[in-house]
Length: 342
Image: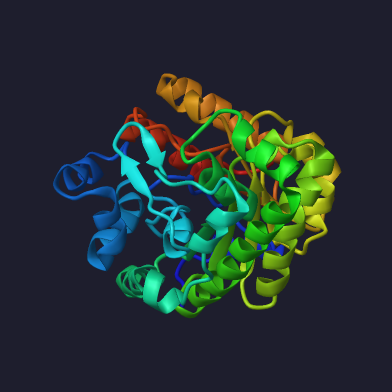
């Protein structure tokens, strides 16, 4: 039994005594205890050793007091499982030294047996679930197929992912073949996360906002729709496509229980587009957590007021920055927990 099921009730649209709160990337670099582990183990060691992933997942529950745990992992475990080499270079980001550029490169990509390639994620979920002992729900996640394709084709992070877009525009058949393979892999992967104990699944489309509304439908949303359809009867789902607020209405129609939004759209506007049958999650600007604490408190209250009571999960509009002081993160969480809608 969950002692704190605020997140789940909010996603189901039930009435809650207060707004639940968690933060994207809450298990990670801004926490001093995490940095100790980072200095000892490589990134993928931290992901692949279930006891380390569990320890990292629990840190923000104990230290910041959030209403949900999100498993410590990475969206790039999928391209890794599908046969591509993925390196994570500290302070530089991901590097895929041998990206997909042509139809011939597709020979190197496979739909994996997720138990063989990603069993460590399921082990970490089971271990975390046990360690949480019902304190808060556990969130599992994956990257959206379009975002995964961006890395598989570009080979590294980018502000524009123009090579990935060019690949889709010049070799559409290959692109859709790859997107479908990622989708099929992701569905099996996420179903296994649910079996291993995930109470909620979040799909991250970090680069959805780089596409026009038409291209977003063709290259991103039609694949996310398949994933949500495969999961929605088994688990509560949240769809977060950063910057793609133009498609909130069609994202709400997928049947996802929640939609994440970033800070570039007003809550009132998001609600108007998404309708009343879905929970909104967001949308505090992570950089604002660098403000003095009284400013954070004032801004968080203003945000909560705009969303109003019910069907809102307080969160950041993207991941927490590595240079945010822990007491500032705690101020964000505490302000939400103390806030009462009038």
